[in-house]
Amino acid sequence: MIENTLREDGGALVRVADSGPRCPHYGVCGGCSLQHVPYSEQLELKRRRVAEAVGREPDEVLPSPVIWHYRNRMDYAVSPELAVGLRERGKWWSYVDVRACLLQSPEADAVRNAFRSFALERGIPGYDTRRHSGILRYLVIREGKFTGERMVAAITSEPLVDKLAEFSPPARVDSLLNGINRGLSDTSRADEVLIVRGGDTISEVLSGYRFRIGLNTFFQTNSYTAELLIKLVVEEVSGSRTVYDLYSGVGTLTIPASSVVEYAIGVESDPQSVDLARRNASENGSGADFLTARVEALGHIDADVVILDPPRGGVHPKALGAIVSSSPSKIIYLSCNPAKQGEDLAKLRGYRLERLVAVDQFPHTPHVETVAVLSRGARL
Image (tube, rainbow, N blue to C red; front, side, top):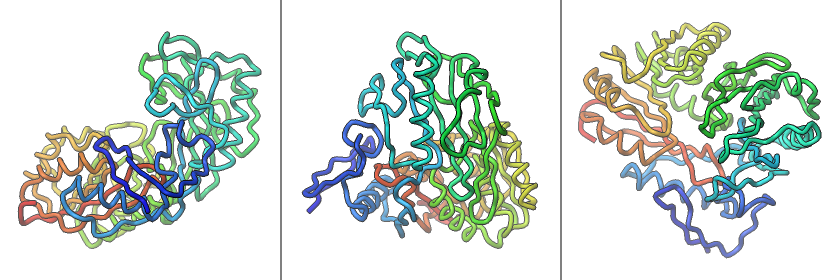
């Protein structure tokens, strides 16, 4: 028997009669806090979370087709002592030196462990976030689950290309990069990207479409459930004339949507993502167009359907106002933050929530993706 609930902050309060987490770091690492809960019960927890956040039961809760080794990106923090892993739960200053992670592939494990040994042997100083000293800040590994391609990026406080060129990974690496972050903020995002070996992108194939991904570009972290999201969106936009995809990234939703509508336009503020989206559209034979713009700066949106896939902070209030005043017939809102999504949905006056689907993008964690489909004609 399992008694469980989800806290407001997304944490889980769970009592389990028979627990058996597979990860050796479970209980200390800040990663998979639901690993000891049977997967069917995890889905039930997430169903409840979505219902509480949005105010109605989801019509479906779609499981991830793969629940181990599913992440296509991991950002491993590096301690001053060169522990390479994740932060201890509730202690941002404490590091778990991860030797085996069940979220990414065994090959990624091998690369991470080899890189730790390499950094120790070469005497590369880890970065101290308190003193703002040292060099090595993060190790980022991105993978194409359906292509086998892999990107490895050392995020450092100063260029380290010559030394990184000496690293010999034990598994396939198509792109070895040095991302430079000279700022004080603790982030794996690079202000400058230097190529050590290979190219500056890797490819992933989703639902028959090939997407190029860069170090800093947003991409759904679970390729298997990303295909479920694409299927849902394509179903909902099929036959429409004009679709605007706001927060479009590298075109993951815009390009598939373009195959079933007359016009598909993606709007994205990150120039690199827009460049890659245009390249992805061209290489996939898609007629999708992409604009470099902040969503909140848009005025009237001349669209039958608007797709929203914002960051965790939700849709900018100005953008919500512009959408309502533009009056598209349908809105499709994807979110990894159901609580914020619920707040935003309440502001879409004159729209009715027709469909709500929860997609388990993040097995063994409290997080869940939701797809809300709204039609014009009535208040929520």
